Image (cartoon, rainbow, N blue to C red; front, side, top):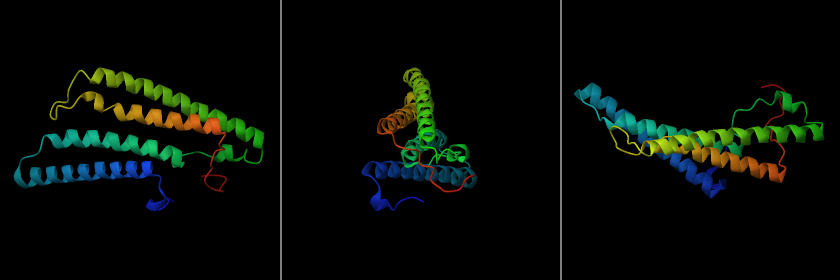
Length: 167
């Protein structure tokens, strides 16, 4: 369960506010477009493009915020069996964090390539640099990778988040 907003770190509050703003703008744009299309036979061409851009940003902001909070989907059945063997649990934790770091590097590298390619072209309707679409993936990869490195350096144990053996 999430902590009340008054106990959130200021950066978490900012990210949550940005995600809520993205969702509100998307919902408003889509609702307005539906009303205009079915009620008046017209539409706002920028609505679809804006919604797509905001959705991508919202998803990657959410992913970056979920990792340090331990809210990503996890299959803990196997690792949970090692809970009572501290040495094996520590090794498994390190391997998992190194895999997270590798995935972050691969995601970041691919996203950076897309950002560089996209900065030379603009979107059709709104005219923003197309590099803004993969940019949140790059920022997410950096945030998750930095968090994984920090957790490796701190030797922070995995938080299994529950006592059940199988999910």
